[in-house]
Amino acid sequence: MSVLIVDYNLSNLGSIRRSLEECGVSPVVSDDPGKLKTANRIVLPGVGSFTDGMANLRKLGWASALQEAVWEDRIPLLGICLGMQLLAEKGDEGGTVQGLGLIPGEVQRFVPEDSSTRIPHVGWNEVRKAAGNRLFEGIPDSLDFYFVHSYHFIPRRKEHILSTTPYCGNFVSAIGVGNIFGVQFHPEKSGRPGFQILKNFLKV
Amino acid sequence: MLKVRVIPTLLWKDPGLVKGIGFDSWRRVGTMMPAIKVYNTRQVDELIVLDITATFEGRVPDFESINEFSAECFVPLTIGGGVRNLEDIKNLLRAGADKISINSIAYDNPRLIREAADKYGSQCIVVSIDARKSAGGNYECFSHCGSRPTGKPLDSWAREVEELGAGEILLTSIERDGTMQGYDLDLIKRVTRNAGIPVIASGGAGSYQDMFEAISVGNCSAVAAASIFHFTQQTPMGAKRFLSSMGIPVRNTNVRGESP
Image (tube, rainbow over all chains, first blue to last red; front, side, top):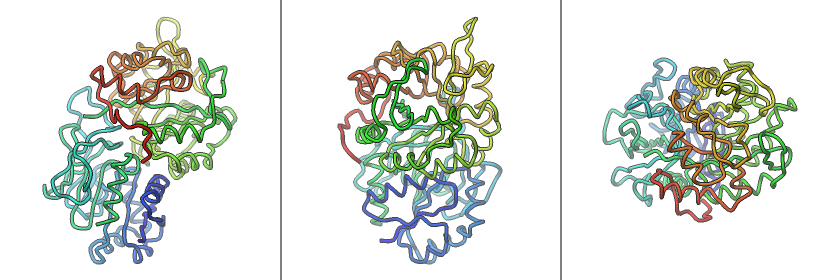
């Protein structure tokens, strides 16, 4: 299986590459959108701000190539952390910016519930999965995954929600539409359950 | 519910793993790689690795070694020591760091915090503050591994780094470091009282009870510790079991040496 990790100059590529290797595949890290043609799976990682992320995706030619790969070639894609957020129609980190528009919704900053709620949301928090989704197959409900983020994805449609997590109310910690998936937590840093997410993605 | 993290700190002084007392009298306690492997196997909540001589020696971070560490580390990894600019941050992230700790350079060039947060997001930027009690019960911040007074009072510097976009503060008491006499609760409270970002308490943990107090009294989001794990039989997992018994929300109290 050919797994492509999108290198848009803004990510913790080492961790995700090593984790996928532990899951039994040999991913290719590439900054060349031409490589999408031969990929069976696409992983869009991300550490960074929405604005810089989109700017880099556009500059390097990824934005339209990714849309084509998931819409026309139906290649399964997993966005992680910022990579999930970039799937949205727009984000408001560093001004309102248009996203990849692969999943209807927008990305907003957390609003603290009270003065004791600290932003960013950093650490281990539970993931409550929606019934019957392939990404969480074999993973018990309410396990802890590792999060580190200040913004969250607000999907327009409830049926796209794959999991929620209790912080500043409940936010959406995983989304999915057809062959497109996104997780706000870091499966590559979440121990066994995280590896299971990656394996499930490789199986879809 | 968001869990309180227990974070082992590994201090790295070429080529070994060391621990000192009061940021001095460094003693070699092992080598880095086996320590990282052990903590990875034990599924700790997070790891902090600090190269304590890089800034002193005017060296760039040792990207190659960090690349090797991260290849064996599937737990969240914060790397610090010798970071001077955006290029260093980029290269550390590429080498496998999840978060970057910035310390000395921030005093000379506070704008780096803002630039790094704009580019990589606040969540990626941990500002490390080493403080020492000064006359009148106030605290002063020190750079260069605790050796250089910066003249910055703790309260205003903590506020400033948050305003500049720091995502977390790693707060270390220089006097308590390595003493295992307990965290400096006043120090922690002074920062957590006004901070809107998570604070990691560091310096002085000698028992699980110390950690409990840093959390319950100091109100920190995470406790970091080194000596207690190097020099006693106490472990991160033991700490979490104790904290859990005291009603503190922690993660995974029943993993036993499982690999991922």
